[in-house]
Image (cartoon, rainbow, N blue to C red; front, side):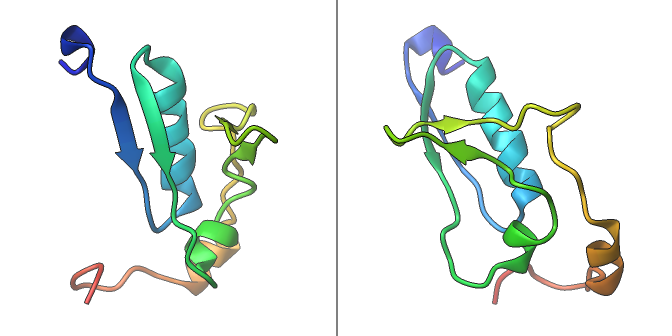
Amino acid sequence: MAAAQKLPVHLHTAMTGLNMAASIHVLAAIENRGYFEADVSKHNLFRDALVSCPFTVREDGTVLPPQGAGLGVEVDEDFLLAHPAIEGPGYA
C-alpha cells in the first residue's frame, strides 16, 4: 500500500539479530525501501550472540543483507537452549 502511494517504508527492528536479518531482506526486496533503524544498545546478546552476523554496513552507511541460505544467518541453538523464553511482557 505504501508503494502505491509512493511512500518509503522505514523498518524498525529490535531485540534479535534474526529479526534484523529478516527486516533487511524485506527492505532489499521492495522498491520503496527507506531507512533501516537498528538496535545499537550495549550488551544485547540476542542481537550479538543468537545468530551469525545479521548484516554488513558499507562505508557509505548502506546495509547489505546476509547472503547465505534462507535469511542468511546461522542460529546458535545452544544459545537458545541457555536462554529460554519466559512468559510476560517483552519490555518493562
